Length: 402
Image (cartoon, rainbow, N blue to C red):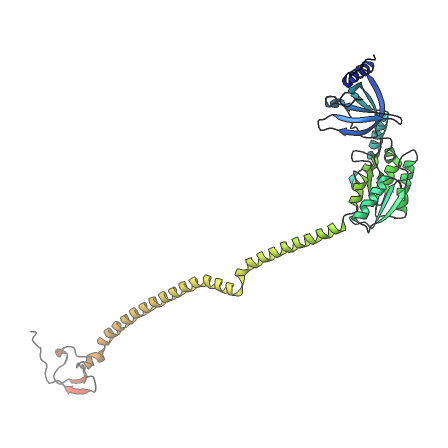
């Protein structure tokens, strides 16, 4: 009888034959279905027009990789054929990976990049601002490409009032660069748009080459209309990205950049208006609070609180001064009264008023102070308080002191 095998046995035989027959092999093909895993391994497929083979590159081989793989690249991969028993399919386990035929292209692009940069085509001071609300958007791309449809869908959803002008052009092939540059120049010649989106969907390095041609780069740099470059996917790069006024990672992102949502913008303006109003009201309330102590009534009260102690001190000083002056005046009055009393007591009239008289010897004309100053027969003039007495001296006597 014919020998029978289990599935595992058959798979093991196939694996042994394949791995022993292809221990080391180099395969060229287009990279597709590229999907890095969370564990760090790279899973992808290599294909050509007739066939496809699954492949894996484990993370321990990644340090030797000097470029970032992406779908559409033409690769040259060296590795071995292996069978994955759990799924019953064979795959290529990659040891090394390099761009097939792309090395010369990358070197050429780097040389062109340095030359154009030296002319200043990539300088920041050449960049023009992108209008926030353009009325007309120009699209330089393939009329039938998915990129144009993505842009139109986003513009209809976000800003249906925007007018769109499509400048159909080739986006790959030998004549693509001349076509792209001519469409950019026509848009500027007739001023047909407020902003231009120049780009296409993703593709291989060769597919994107027209957007790195010198004619396209110069047309983008010389454009008076602001240009947004949207070539390929986010990881794709073209020299027109450097010359454009703005680079968008994808055509869809470019459409979003030129179609700021009117409703969102209006809501934002209303929100900012309320924010400004609230901030101003808060400042006004604070100003009123700070100015409240400077109202008429408050100022009068504050002035009084400042002036009152001064007035009290002034009144106390006034009273002290008046009391001091009054005391001094009383003292001077008393001294004046005493002086007056003394003067009045020594006045001849006061003496005469007390009963004394002034006796004058008419012969000598002197006031008699002693009895011996008059001789018998002298006429005397006696002056009492009132009136005048004339007398003649009969004799004088000397009184005995007791």
